[in-house]
Structures are given as structure tokens and as C-alpha cells.
Amino acid sequence: MNEENILSILSEWKDEFDLALSRNNSIGLALLNTAGEVLFANSLMKSFLQGKARDKFINPGFDRLISIGGDDTLIFEGYLTLGDYSAANASLWSQVYRKANKLLVIGGIDAEQLIEQNRKLHRLNRDVIDLQRELIKKKHTLENTLKRLNNANDGLEELNATKDKFFSIIGHDLKNPFHVILGLSDLLEKNADGYSPEKVRLFAQKIRDSSRSAYNLLENLLKWARIQRGELKAELAKVEPLEVIHEVKDSSQPGADAKNIRLAIRDDGHGWILADTEMLRTILRNLITNAIKYTHPGGKILIGTQRLESHLQFTVSDSGVGIPPEYIDQLFNVDCSLSKPGTANEKGTGLGLILCKEFVEKQGGQIWVESELEKGSDFKFTLPLYQED
Image (cartoon, rainbow, N blue to C red; front, top):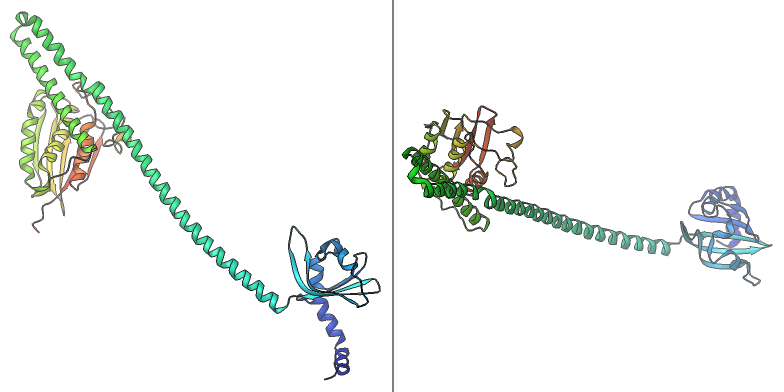
């Protein structure tokens, strides 16, 4: 088909070509005068030449285009960048014609340019995905680091509370029984001949009670110190619980008798347990001593057992003063601020309950308390039943 036939066919479709070019968003068409004023622009070019049109020619600039000399009407062919330096812009493969002080700009995106842009977008998308993955990894690393720091901070707070508790006990509670022992023994040394046998017996009883209190406290302190150093391990073996309960009850009886408190044992079902006998003794002794301390004279303390599916539950129940509700959840924590004298003004440190929790958990059990003010408390803990296999 020769050029004349092509022009003939195009002339038949002139209106359609005009309409298509004016609305086209792929091919840009614009006619400007040499002052940079837009005489005509189709849809694509209007989007780039809004505002002062001559300033929208970025590379080459408008002044550079109109300065190109020569007799040929085609003054430029190549990539023409239109838009704003600081905003959106695009490079179009363009032809610029000059005729009678007017510029005709025809441009669009060619196939190679589109392919290259797609390649760049693909590389950019891949880089963004890699960056996202790296950010996710760093986020997880930061979260783990933060978790470790929080755990370390919790450990430091607990360690600081432990240190404060330790020095408080040494500085105050451990000194008190020795003040009693030293004071009474000094009085006995100076005035024994003048005291009646009943008074000497009373002094001896108070010295004995203070000595027992100091010994028990020192024993708890030493055990607690070994726990903090990680030296105290549970030596688990097959244990008959009622034997240990009767043994601890008998050793606690003098303290109960001094306050006219009745100690009783109730067995609602038991069995062999897997436990450390010495730890079990310490738990029961501390719980019974605490119950005696906070039970009014003439009261009652019940030591009971109940068989569960896989554990044996121990309960030390008293008819004492009870525990305020706000202290129930923190009673076994080292930083618990609850500290009150017993019903006979006995001193307490709270260290015994901390030891109980440590020892119960080392044997695979749990400990908790149920209490009501002025009605008493039930201290309960579980230890695993012994399994023959």
C-alpha cells in the first residue's frame, strides 16, 4: 500500500482519529506557541502542562527547545521529561516539530521504556520485600531483647527485694530474741538468789522460747540463702505423709500448749507421696508455727490431708485473725509488706511463707491461702502422689 492510499484511508477516519487523539491517555499531543502558551493539548498532555506550561519542560527545557536551529521541522526526537522537579514527572519518547512560531509535541511511552520501567519496579518490589523481611527479623530481635531486658529487670527487682528482706531480718528480727535472752540472763546472773523459783522458771521459759525462735529463724535464713545460691535441691523419695505430720505436730505441741490451742489431725484420704522429707517438715513446721502465732488462746488448728487425682492436698486450718483480702495474692512474695505481731505479740518476718512456696514448687506442687478476717485461714499446698512406675 503506497503513501497516497494510506493518506486517503486516514482522511476517511479523520474525525475518529481526532477524537481518539484528543482523549488518548497513552499518546500525548500538544501545540504551543514560542511564548510557552498552550494552544491545544489532549488528555495526557493536560495532566503534565497544568499551570505555567513552559516550566513543565524539565529535560530538555522549553528555552532549550526553541533555541534549536535548522531548516527541518523536526527539531527534537528522544526522551522528553515533563512535570515538576519536586512532584510527579515522566519521560515520554517524543518528537517536537516547529512551524510558524509554534511547537507541536507528540509523545508517549515506547515498549522498551515500559519493559525497563517494569524491570525497575520488579527490582524495587523485591528490594521492598527484602527490606520488610529484614525489618521483621529486626523487630523480632528487638522484641526478644526487650523481653530479656524485662525479665532481667524483674530479676533485679526481686533480687533487690530479697536483699532488703535479708538485711531487715538480720538487722531487726534476728536481734530481738537475743535482746530477750541477754536481758533475762543478765537479770538472772545478778539477782538469781533474790528471785523465787517460780520467777526463775518463768525467766528460763522465756529464754528457751526466745532461743527456739532465734534458732528457727536462723535455720530458715540459712536455707533461704542456700536457695538463692541454687545449692538446695529437692531429694525426692517415697514418703508416708502422716508420719511426717505427726512428727511435726508433736514438735509444735509445746507452742500450742503455751496458748491453750488445740492441735488436731484429720485424714480424709492419703497415700504415699513423692517428696523431700526435710522440705516437707519445714513447710509443715512453718505453717503450723504461723497458725499458732495468729490464733487466739483457746483456739483450734487442724492439719488435714485430702487425696486428689494425682496429688495429695495438705491443709493447715486455723481459727485465727485472718488475712486482709488485699494481701492474699502477694503473701508468698518476698516484697510483701504485710508484717504484724501474733495474738501474743509474737514477732514475725514472713520468711517462713517464702520458704514454704520455694520448697513446695521445688517438689512439683502449688501453695495458696484462703482466708477471712477474724474467722481464720486455710493454708493449702499439694505434692505429687508416688507412682510405682
